View 1 (cartoon, helix red, strand yellow):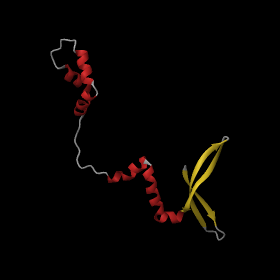
View 2 (cartoon, one colour):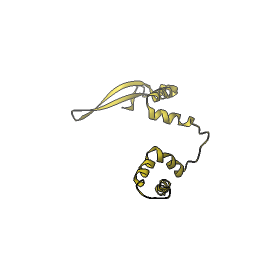
View 3 (cartoon, rainbow, N blue to C red):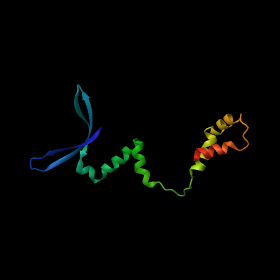
View 4 (cartoon, rainbow, N blue to C red):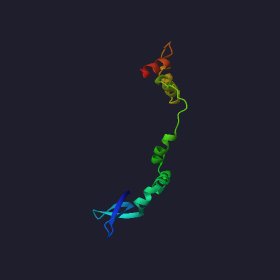
Length: 123
């Protein structure tokens, strides 16, 4: 669906423009357009009711609602989370520490190979 304007000429030479919502379909390898909604005259809609209509429709579109309300988001404080801290939190959650312990458990390593492996992954 998309919007389309349709302009008509009056006998006195003036024009009037209508805003429509149109749906396009392919029927028998031919493109057919069907007017789903005739909203109103464009001049009347631009006086303010069009903005209210768009805001109302954004309630049903998650993507557009987020874009519309993004300006109201405020960050009160932010922390610097570097790669080392982030990976340090993800490492045990993903079970990587257990995998390293299982693989290296059969060796006679004397150092902390879990932290050494974490450091190698970070680099």
